[in-house]
Amino acid sequence: MWRYLAPLGIFIVLVIFLSIGLKLDPREVPSPLIGKPAPSFTLPNLKQAEQMINPDDFRGKVWLLNVWASWCVSCRAEHPVVNELAKTGEVIIVGLDYKDGLEEGRQWLRQRGDPYIASAYDEDGRAGIDWGVYGVPETFVIDKKGIVRYKHTGPLTMKDVTDTLLPLVRELKKEPA
Amino acid sequence: MKNWWLISLWLFSALAMAGVEVHEFKTPEQEQQYNRMVEELRCLVCQNQNLADSNAELAQDLRQEVYDMIQQGASDKEIIDFMVARYGDFVLYRPPLKSTTLFLWIGPFVILGIGVLVLLFHIRKRRAAQEPELNEAELEKARQLLNNDRNPS
Image (tube, rainbow over all chains, first blue to last red; front, side, top):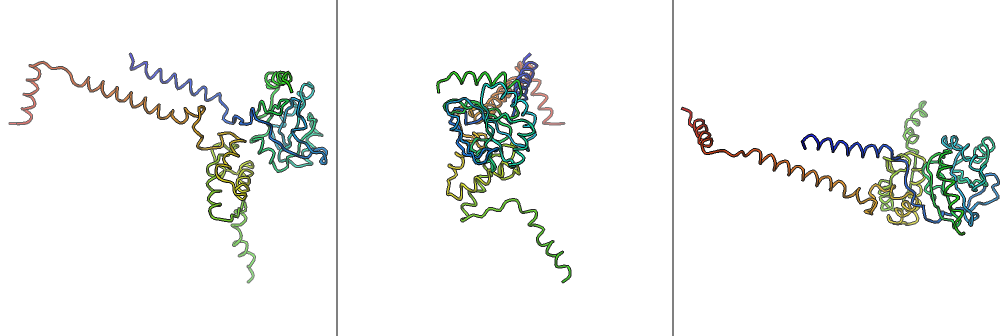
């Protein structure tokens, strides 16, 4: 009896492990930034280079940092979702234009709409390294105290927005500043 | 010489291909440290390559970062802490022993142990099966057969 049951048991365990493995996304690298203060940067505003943007400017508010670039193909798919999210007016979205050309970045916003209250222009990608950016687009949720609470890697979908981002934002808004 | 330009093209052709990154180091120790670090750190974009092998743009930036830190006299630990603070344990090919990585480190030994136990169990079972009980008459018969074999007439 065992002779037949044991291989079957091993097979079932293998199938379970492999099916879990199939569902895991190896590109989903857990961010060590969660629960830590948002890394600082001082970068020019993409639209008005004389104005500087710093994460401290948004202290006391719940905000999103959306990393994008005009050369990034997935950002093209994501952009309408970010536009929709901005339209809800529930949360302010700051852009981080990562390793982009100044003119290309500006043109992108002109053509596809600008959901950001401002986009920081990270020409050499140094701010991106500090934020642990490894695949554009990425979206971070930062609470009122300036702590990173959530990170989404890859393009946002409407489902991510309604199921995850907005509920989290509403929760964080209830927290004291 | 008429074909001097052809010869110079030939002479400098290697430069065209080698023009990826040239880093100059003050000491050989720094160069060794650089090579050690970019071997040790993993590229996040192309996940099965280290920083040294990868041509991804992020890997180039991170190599530059490692180079800059070494120029400023950073130690191995400082460089690794810098990377782990930003990208997590994932950037290390040899992740530290923590509760989340415990299974990664001891898992193979646990599985090996189970394998050895199963093997021992099987060997013991087979040995028991190979020694059937014989009665006196059967033993006598076996002795005769063996003796016949030993002294062929």
